[in-house]
Image 1 (tube, rainbow, N blue to C red):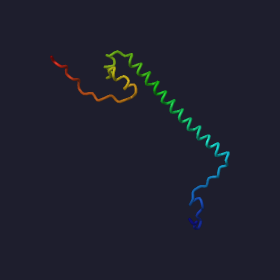
Image 2: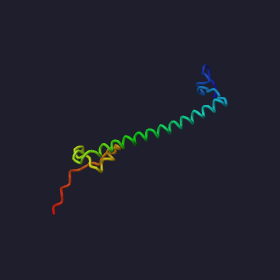
Image 3: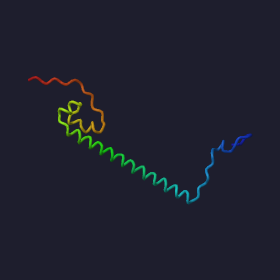
Image 4: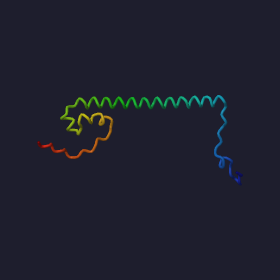
Length: 100
């Protein structure tokens, strides 16, 4: 490309970055590696904390009696899903009992 008139070189090619020396590139590689390790550890910690919250909520809901669970719209089978935040299935009207 050619520079025309008052046009500056960085307007054509973008800003220039200083070339890094061997020491700086090695340090930046270490920083990038440590950032990746930190990201993995942060992900593990988040999953562990979520697992602990779900277990605690499951334990708390399991202590309720069936009548109280029915009042909040749950059954014993729904406790784990409700604690994990999974949307409960849509419930239709209760089925009529079979007559013998």
